[in-house]
Image 1 (cartoon, rainbow, N blue to C red):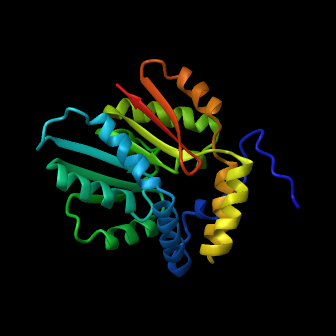
Image 2: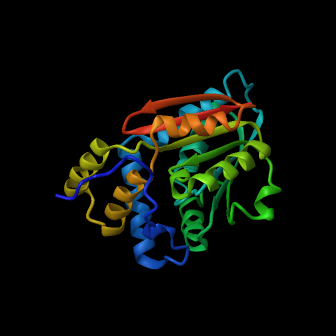
Length: 237
C-alpha cells in the first residue's frame, strides 16, 4: 500500500486542470463531480455561507454573486432556486477557464435566466475589473499554489462588497481512504476518481487557512470544519 503523505500540499496536476479537456470525458466527469458534491453535502456548505453573509438583507434586494471555477454550474442553480424562494433579485455569474465547461454549464442552466457564464482567466485584467457583492470559491482554491492563492484572495477581496465564501477540502488521510471506498461503490469514472484523490492531497489543513487569513487582516474571518471533510472559510467585510 502506498503511504499517504499529508504533511504538505501536493503539487500534482489534476486531469481537469487541462483547459482543453472536452467532449464525453468532460461531460461525464462534470456529471459525476456534481453527484459527489450533492451526495456529500458540498453545495449546502456554500449556500449556508451565502445565507450568513446576507443575514438581515431585505427581500427584493439585488445581489450579484460570482462562482469561480463554476464547473457545470450546479452550485449556481441551487443558489438560484434558493433565491427565488427568498425573493432576492439574484444576478449570478459562473466563471471557468475551460470554454468547453462553460458550454456545458450554459446548456444545463437554460431555465435560469438569472445565471450567466463566462470563460475567463481569473488572473486577467478583464476579470479583475468585474465587481460583485459576494465571490464564491467552491472546490477551486486547492487547484492553485500557495503564492497564487494569496493573490487570488486579494483580488476577490477588492472586487466583493459583502464578502467571500470559500468551500474546500480538508487534507486528511482519513478523507483519502474514505473517498477511495466511496468511489469503489459509487463512482466508475477514472478522471473523477483520480482527480478526487489528488484534490484531497492538494487540500488544506486548518492552519493553512489561518496562516492565509493573517495575511488578509482587513477581513472578518470564520473558518469552520464541515462534513464531509471540508472547510468553509467566510471572509466578511
